[in-house]
Structures are given as C-alpha cells and as structure tokens.
Length: 219
Image (cartoon, rainbow, N blue to C red; front, top):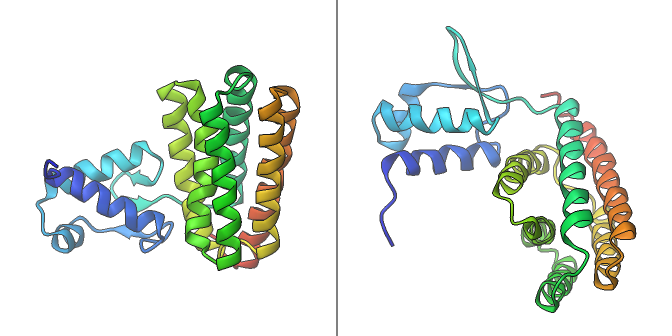
C-alpha cells in the first residue's frame, strides 16, 4: 500500500478530530499549533483546511482565520432535508428491481444491527446504520449524489457526538424502520419504500432535534 502524502495525512487527521468533536464546532484552528501537532509544514495544513472548507466542515473568516463549522438546529434540518431528497430519489429511480445480492446484503445488515443492540455495541450499530443507507444510495451509481451524501454524513457524525448519541428506544425503532423499508424493496414496491424512508428520516430528525437540545448543545 502506497504511503499517504503529508497533505492527505493532515487532511485525514484534522477531519477525524472534527468529526469526533475533538475540535469543537466554532473553535478557532491555529495553523502554527496544527503544524506542531501533526509535525508538518504550513502547506499540507492549509491544503487540508481548504479541502475541509469545501466539505462544509471548516469556515474561513477574512482576517480571522480558520474555524470549525458550527452545528445547529438549522444545520440538522438542512441535513435531513438533503438526505430525504437524495434517498427517496435513489429508491424511486434506481431500486425498483434490486438483485438478490443487494437484498441479501440489506438483510444481513439488519441481522448484524440486531446483534449490536443485544451487545450494546453502539459504535458498530452506527456504522451499520450508515451502511444500510449507503447500499441504497449506491444503486444510483452517481458519484455526484454519493459525494453529496458523504458530506451530509459528516454532519451526522458530529451530531451523534454532541447529542450524546441516541436513546435505546430510538435505536431499536431504527432497525424496525429499516426492516419495513427493506420489505417493500424486496417486493419491488418503490412507492411504499419511498414513503417508509420519508417517515424513517423524519423520525430520525425529530430524535436528533431532541437529543441535541437535551445535550445542551447550543453550537
């Protein structure tokens, strides 16, 4: 495996810290301190910050510098609005005749998610949740849509950290809702699957709002 360039290493490291909220929303990012932390020159750091600004994870303020992008109720609303548009489009236009391998992958995903609930493995459960939605979206075979979804997913990662994650009841409901979506997809009923996805994402949005408020995150 080829060694990552310094630019890529800096990008990966800074992004990881932003998504885990080790660099909190609205916090100032000092270039000199970043250079010292990652043992690189300014060029890789500036390149990384510019890329992250394009992904809406960094804000560049004139004469002030680099700041981690804020996360707010409004941002959550935009995130789920975008997800609803993307995912219902994918179902409506590309999921009317899923092959058996894709259906099996979705069933296996739900099976593993149920085990995570039993074992209280929340981190793996979130990975599987993301995987379920990506399997559906990837049916589009459209890298512009997939790239947009990836950027939206970044905000979901931060939200989970700041809100203290979601309650157990919501996690169980998520699996039930995934199962309902899959049942419709397996029958080729994209209209019902599309509606089930809308309900699922609306429930997730409501839960996210409440978790964000309960977490006393005014960022």
